[in-house]
Image (cartoon, rainbow, N blue to C red):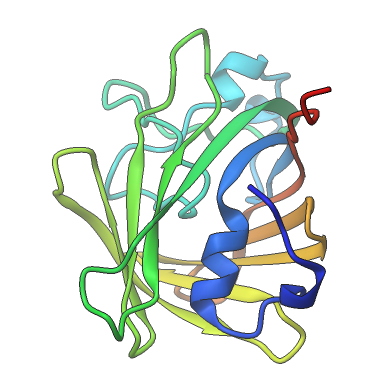
Length: 204
């Protein structure tokens, strides 16, 4: 996708979402911030560290997209892990002319399994909905495009709040940070991602 320097940084949500379109090579570091006892402070394998808590115990950031294992208990260990992979993002044209559009997000492969694609539908009034492939709503949230060109997404769960901030330092370099907090304000988990757009070489 050709990026015009005159369109950078994006000044409205539709332009920001269009700039997200593409294949991104992402490196993500994640942290468990909950205090645990000595018995729980054991090293955690990358496979286990990649599992999210089951539905109802935690909510994931819109771009995380990990497939929660409903048979797995929520990880209680403190751990720090890094993972890399290819994140595919496709811009979805708006259904209504006054809407900003949406994104189809296919997360990186986890434990040799491709992540399930998800759809993010944005409303002009400041809300968005995260859906699965079948169109079923997974969560709702609010968006805000700040004056510095960063996009903040906030989702409220039963017991926690996830805030994800996304910004571009260059048209082909994107950064994301996500923090989950409990209703009492205590931090639960955090992640930071650095993403480089994969650009095809022009034909000779």
